[in-house]
Image (cartoon, rainbow, N blue to C red; front, side):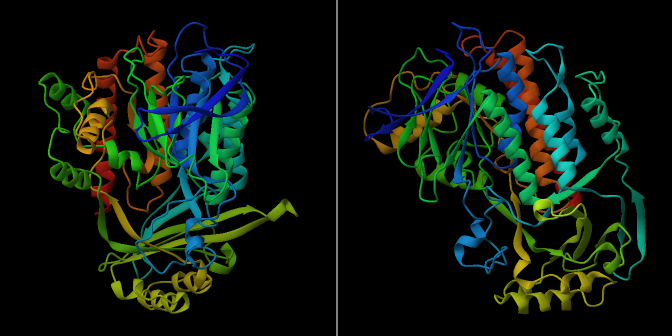
Length: 559
């Protein structure tokens, strides 16, 4: 690409079909300081979704962009605006999401909510790794990454003593989460003490950071904006709730055979990303109801996709009805048969009688569980150095009568009656939480994981044939002519909304994906024409399989 100090990002309007484009350009200029070698097409990356997964991915890929392994900038598209409120508030519900419909799953939204969320330190440690730098001093921690961790630790609270209990209050086990190792690593990185970029973190003791969801997303977003100033990342947010120009609805394969492993993004306003800068890698991080997953995702592994192509047959050569049914099954979310209620009690540790100890209590019927974790954060506008103490809790039950109640206060009383015979301070915590701030969600999870897609053209060809009587477009069946399509976060696998695992898994996967990509690109495959598809497929297949083992173990443990 022509990488000048001023790089123009073009968007073109679409006419009747994605292959017939007009020449009206909408351009937004931004500055970038690229380190990419001129005259060599670098891997160009688009991230779809600006939640925890998408933001983390952009941050972990930023060092690759600065090293010249991928093109700058990394484009991140988020369908919501920075001024948007949480989706719960757009449907006439209470201010913090006391919804009437337990099956309404809007995700975190762009801004996030006041509810506390947990992040395990395994999701944070990759941000402390060293990276090659174009500045003097060689390998060093990335400033935006270190500042991110500092911000999270300032706005959040490390969980200390933890344990499991029975409904009568008996302790089954008690332990203490020691975060001293992680804090030492941060201190060493901040003081520029030597640390290997490949240092093993497997022996680090587990630590759990609790933080308000809105503070968590703000910290990630601020780190991305810091990278944007350096030219490594470019964010694309909607300008308003009615703006559809950043909502990605599909992938278009260029007709030109000169553009190897490339594609353009189709947006909801029927505009298309620039044909002069097509994407070689598209990463779908657009949530549980991912549009890209539903359109292109399937259950076949990359190896199976390759064999089907070599045999002249793909799963996409089915009848439309068969494919629709198969697609719905592969991308369906499964009802886990219980409802999750979450709230934040204003009680301090002293008022709740917790003494800084968090617990989870397991019931014996109706999938009943209750857990509470202490959390603290700075005062609003930091008007004092004191921190606000709160108790974040969740409760689960299969009792459909509770979730069927539409009045928030009546539902709260019903929740309390479900746990009235359980030990203190469970009912006190529920009772002290404002009814209109108690969140309700039906527990759901994806029935199947989705594998990377290396054959977008095959899918696109099938979709084209189902919509037109024209003959097959030549070249569309050539394997590898479209962009790589990977899935991350909830778009890859949505898990039950408990155990503080959703954000953690998404962030861990983001770091792993960036690491895998860096290995290949650093080995000489830093351009789309040199990329070793077979080798990358093999490694990605193994990475996905390893991830499936972990995710399956988590799900089975919950059951």
